[in-house]
Image 1 (cartoon, helix red, strand yellow):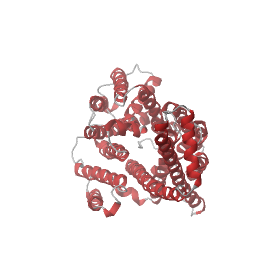
Image 2 (cartoon, helix red, strand yellow):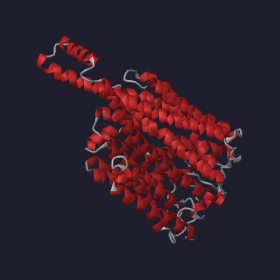
Image 3 (cartoon, helix red, strand yellow):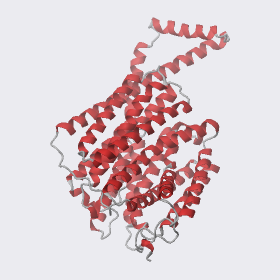
Image 4 (cartoon, one colour):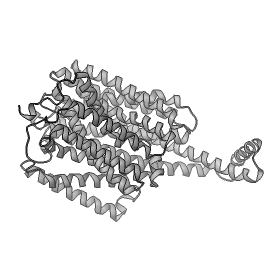
Length: 529
């Protein structure tokens, strides 16, 4: 029997166990992104700025995005189990290095490797899932389960991170993931066939290595510009000007190469489909609008002083909302509900999330106030992700559909980077504007200022504090109150901008010329990313 006809799993493995192993493999691949659910803890542990943590995530993301395009050839060369075990071994080694060292450059290097491993394992999971699904109904469900797993993995690991960091230092997060990966390795060795492969073996000739180099450089440079642009003052900085010029040159070289190359890294013919471009823009918008949750968690922990363990219910309702909406979305797709109708409804729910956040974001409040809006966020995520990806992937011919998926992944990456850039820029200007307004009202000529300071001092004196330290402590407390007001106000301003953008998008989807109907066809031979 040819190797690509040998069953992936041993004959004694029941279907439920195979599916459990596949889902465990998927979760193990996404840990590198979950580290960034606690950016302040990471910044404090490594002694870097929050912007550096942002770029570390961008670097890992870019590594995964670029390698997925290369993986399309790699997975056809190696046997499935060996390829998977290689990725898991690299993950263990890089986690061990991060556990025993505290060097930021080394962490970035390991993050790059973990991005490659994430792409490798996600590709394997997709190839494990879709060949097992023989009917259109099963493929829709498998599609939903895979992307649902991607969406809930971040809040799932955030719960893990919050729990571990409550008791241990940051590096112990890597120790936990090593244990988990070792369990996955054991399961793979026990259940998967060592000689099986997903495809007939194709030698690694005419692989577009130069195109891959161009692609990864484009991703890394674009991410660097969008993350550090505000800090470097954009085009006023010669560094940004140089990087922008280099990025544009690399883009032209990459596009020219992919058009002429016989076996391109990415087939750009997908852009001939108008509906695919619409889907790509919707995917970009989705990732821009969904990137505001970091401000929510920051508001809970910094402004309201919520202990990270008490934020776990918030993560839990995000998982619940995403899971429920993914289930309903799959049912609606199976009943033939128009994709654009589901997408519009999803953006409406996302807008409701921003409306609720504008109501509850203040310097006072309780964690429970944010449970319902975060549930709405989870629902919106589940309603939008699969329909948008399905709309884009179903708009192109089957033989180049995998390229539509690869470009869709780049759109998600770009949306994430743009969201970070908007966040950094808006936070700078809104905080500056709020600070100027406060300076106008909080001055020595304002009698309310002296009364407020006196009340704070009296509160310190009534608790038995020494008179010599009361004035300094009360001033520090007052300054902290001002910072909280600035953070809350700037967060609300950011949500205002996002809400206005969402309303404009929803109106466009409702009243613009109807998008041509696209039949959702998750073809048996198409493995989407």
